[in-house]
Image: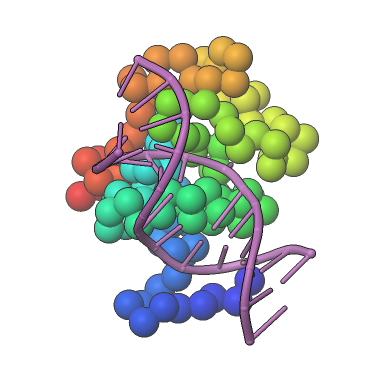
Length: 114
DNA sequence: AACATGACAAGTT
DNA sequence: AAACTTGCCATGT
């Protein structure tokens, strides 16, 4: 993918990818949290769009990113739709496509990193 | 080249 | 409280 930079420096993709890679195993975060960490609610949508690209990169645990209510909205974009299995393998319980005790597993980059 | 859409979220009505 | 509107930027058509 061509790395496009905006005038402020790097593209969202690079930033988003960087943050997602930092998500600890067994933890999850939301699009909004990432968007907020990158600045503000710039665009939670774009974060999801960036994940679409991230899903192709095996180095990026895109399965650890869900929407704000812990719903696995993006599982359709996963190869084999194995998002839930990966989460469960990390100790995250998933019930009806939503993460159980999401708030306890929640990892906020703005808080955990700084 | 222009228009529409998308793994969302927060504020407003 | 529920539904509607706005923000944001890259991609696809």
